[in-house]
Image (cartoon, rainbow, N blue to C red; front, side):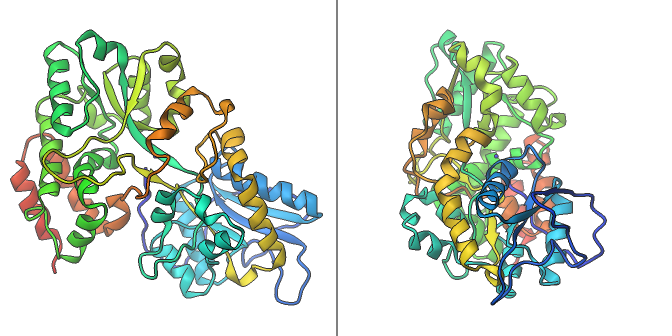
Length: 434
């Protein structure tokens, strides 16, 4: 599933179009999503700002939970849906700057969550989970993903659990006697055999900057978790000094220059690459839980299998080998967190797994059994990350926008062979200073 770049925005008049999915008679005020219960007042409604549309996973999980709870309690609810990333971030920044945040709001773990903490508008979700006995029931990698870098606390609830992995064609592998690769050397050997036999080894949406960056970051993630990217940003580490980072640059260079991606991969977006692979083109694709519905036909025909991110040869790799993240997470406003909201939080946690599998068709962040109704693919993939302890670390979340833009431009040159891995590393290291 793609991670979103967080940017700093000034407060402005919001012109973004948004959808209001009202559950009662309440309407939004000029300052935000209407009045919420203050100290000493009796709550009449719950307000929420969700990123997505009526059919989004956020609305199917959080939106439905809010509506059902309010109906049971005789409360109104007011849910504002903002479907686009840029519009949502602009609106959230406005609410933060005016200190008019709703009871529940989407907020990625980064600069905006830090801004919300500054106005004391974030409940300590980790403590609330412990209070109701749910903390140890949550996937540890998701907790890791949402843990605040500054104080080690958890202020956000996951949207769901999102897993990424490779999908491969069992029938094509069988035709050439290939085994599922466990290391990147084995992966490249599989690619070579496939290409030598006229197959397209690997489908990628090269038009999407994050997809190529995945291949750059796989090796340093498996070896250092967030160690390399944190050290790179601070100037304490570098591509030239870090062997895992150099391995990542070498991997992307080889995949591009040896012709292991499909023709025209740089003009293929994320939608098109899924249509290509699940439509029958190519032998492998980096995929994930968001593509499960697309995978049904090939999987049902016995043609599709899955494998996690390979190990980096000759280096010590961490145990977790499936990138896991929490999607666009959600916060509870500490300023309006009264007894009713505390009761709703417990209700949400109790209903979360059912909403994930029955409504949104995504993995639950809680360690509950995957129900049979979820389907065979979800039950097959779940053991890959059931006991994962460490989360995915997305570079495009960590880097500032200027450095990210430069690295994206540089990776385009690398994958096309216009620069060597050594030249990539040397140039990338000039983008940050200690």
